[in-house]
Image 1: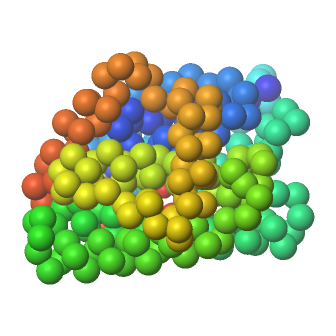
Image 2: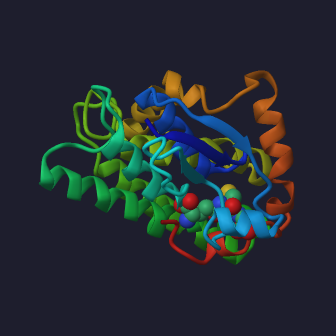
Amino acid sequence: MAKINFYSAWYCPFAQRTWTALEYLGIPYVYKETDPYHKSKRWLKLSRNTGQVPVLQIVDRKAGQGLPDMSIPGSLRSLEYLDETHEACRSLFPTDHIERAEARFWLDQQGADIIPYFYRFLKAEAGSVEANEAKDKMLEGLLAFTQGMAASGPYFFGDEPGVVDFAFAPFALRIEMLLSHYKDYQLPLVDDAWERYVSWWQAIKYHPSFIASMPEPDSYSAKLIEFYLPYAKGGGQEDVTNTAAS
Ligand SMILES: N[C@@H](CCC(=O)N[C@@H](CS)C(=O)NCC(=O)O)C(=O)O
């Protein structure tokens, strides 16, 4: 069977999507901590010129047949690959075609309507017009996401977690942790409209596969807060705020 090298950076929410999925599906992998900002020739080749984590590298394909290693860059493409190839009884995507299309809609919605605005809010000066606009847009996207959840819960589509949950959990964590620390901002979770978001977040936040994507839990929060300091001052990666995170 092919082996998987998982190129990741411990702080990256996109890589955390893939990490959680590897854990959930019980797929063996070799973790490769990477600095994606160091654009060495090797890294650019391995990441197929994206220069970004996550990358799944599929090695020893059909051992003995001499097939070259193959790289899959991008969080969502890697989730699709893992879901299509794993042999366990769990899956990330629903089996029904309409439900799969629905899952993809909510993945796109995260990338278009929530994630860019979270980063803009984090990077904007607290109290500025830009910060308020980004916050309002982020809330709008989050509420639409919440209203898309199955009433039964606790996960997005019901009693089992799946791709929509695992893809958003890393961002829900950063929204909670970084906005309260750097912007003194908490989601208005006491309002009735947010009740379902609260039950969703409580379920996915403590899911063992999500927890497994955060090594050294005692120091994880502090390290993450420290890592995002340049973002909170308006710096950090540019393109995340401009492009839909596919
Ligand atoms: N659309 C990509 C985004 C991945 C991404 O932005 N990764 C960041 C780290 S969190 C990265 O590798 N940045 C390095 C760079 O852009 O140079 C995905 O979904 O995987």
